[in-house]
Image 1 (cartoon, one colour):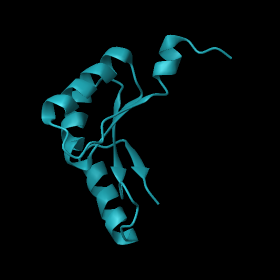
Image 2 (cartoon, rainbow, N blue to C red):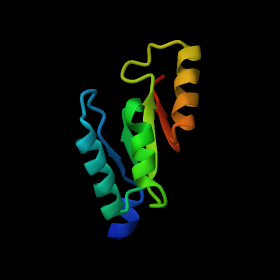
Image 3 (tube, rainbow, N blue to C red):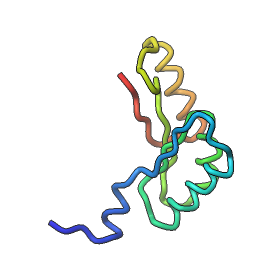
Length: 97
């Protein structure tokens, strides 16, 4: 099966998880995701609300990571992180178990 360019874009999570990623880099990630029609962006939790706002009404979802990078957090901590990310606009969560 061969995917069209548009079909391929709809399965790509455009990701920038550097802990020191600056705001302009997160905004550029969102611009690129919109331009290419990616399914989502994945950003550090501190940037979820910005990404969600930048992607509003675009069809691109904002996502983040929970328990990243080691997954060594307690269940309660991960639950809080997940709830907070959703509250800030995350539509996708990648949890490190």
